[in-house]
Image (cartoon, rainbow, N blue to C red):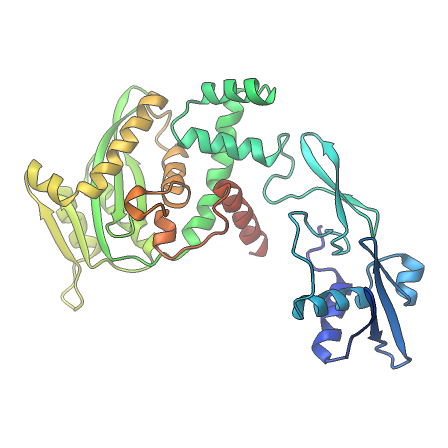
Length: 369
């Protein structure tokens, strides 16, 4: 099992928390009081390598609690150099880490303090290919590139022979991982929902895709697939939207389909205030006028479905994957370049390689639970 917080780091925190005075006695040389009360230990940083005069460091050559305490003290006083893009050592917490080649297409790191090697998991453990290749594949697919074209792209530009079936397995794996994380987040919504359904091909037959979207943020609350357009199918879409929003809507705008009316009554109708208003648009023109936000989404889905040549199954991860892409990855012109998640007050991390950020966040969340 990986060590998330090394015991010596905890004891280093304790030295700072206790209020023991650390003083800088020379150029990158620091005096740290002994916790036993027997004088001080000297901690020094020479050519990016830390050392300490305490017995723990001398005998074991580890990053001791006094070194950790100095690092924390420097950080608190704003004297620590800017963080690099290199990780800290997962074994001892040291920042004296260097890149040490690759094994099985994964970056290997080596700690100069404890002399141990490691790789970063972050959701990619036991994967044969590095995170960059996997996240590029996810991004290209949900941008509308076919699996076979992605396979050809990886071969031409990276010299990798990745079968299209492997790419599909990556999609299933990471959509499931990110989906659990995304569903745990709470968006700040306008409360005005737009709902619509559209026909898609699935294994040669027609199925229905139901989309529920928050009007102001463009946040896609639910995207479900069913064989029919019955009350229970509409109700299922409403239920998933409520679970994502974590609250009742103010208004729900739909077309004139009777299933919406019956499903709305079962899910939202109440005699108590505040009540949710059902704006039911009868007729094609009225429906398009009131539901144009979600109609534009349907157009995007239709373009994507042409590339896929229809769905392979009703329980496909593609619908959930597109919802993730639409909410967290794709910037929207109508939102001034923000994603719906950002518009809804959800910040998942840096804009660069959002797929990687989502996978890392999802992995951490799953590990913590």
